[in-house]
Length: 287
Image (cartoon, rainbow, N blue to C red):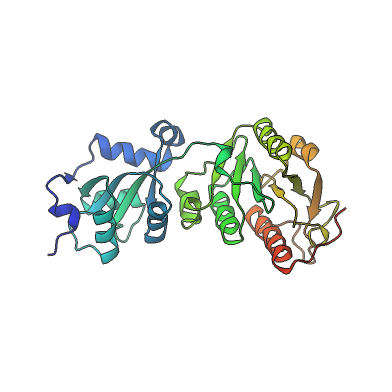
């Protein structure tokens, strides 16, 4: 059987039992506090790992299957990423990959960036999303994916919320979290201080909330101006504090029997309208 680059390296280590290090990595899957204390999380899949490397996220450890012939992609990752590499038993990799059929080729242990709003680039064309107290990590990942696809510049996750680095969020973002800054903040105060500083620097960001009784339909609002779109909690919507801070609110017209949209779907629909306006150059009359 052909050996991977990691297996040939005399410095490569092997883990074949559920030792202390394995248990530390396993804890990253389900324990948010341990992820936060360690400052790292697990990443699986060709696209997510490739994008993490491409965008310069620090990879602390690469765990790979030491008992199989690795693909060309996996061998290239092991050859080009300068970091600790550990060959693991396939059953251990399967546990870290949360799979029941086949173990992943590689699991990357990636360092978390700082929760610094300065990571989000703000210019005259700024389009950002704020998610207020989300309860579903899958929705966080889905919004990151939509925001990345539709040209937004960053996501802010505000308040007591699900974790951006939860495995479900990482998985549902399909790698977009490595190209779109996602920043966690504890309260509206930090966001408003950041917004006011951007306004003082000459970028007049408007805060636009989503509400079924909005000031206007989403199609009638001018999204060509610098915009921070506020998406509410999946059950309760926007908090009273965020409602008060909104400069405008918009609603999505619905004609079916559904009373509302999933938070990620609503965000995607509004982001699409924003990018449509920006591409077409047509500016609606704002309220």
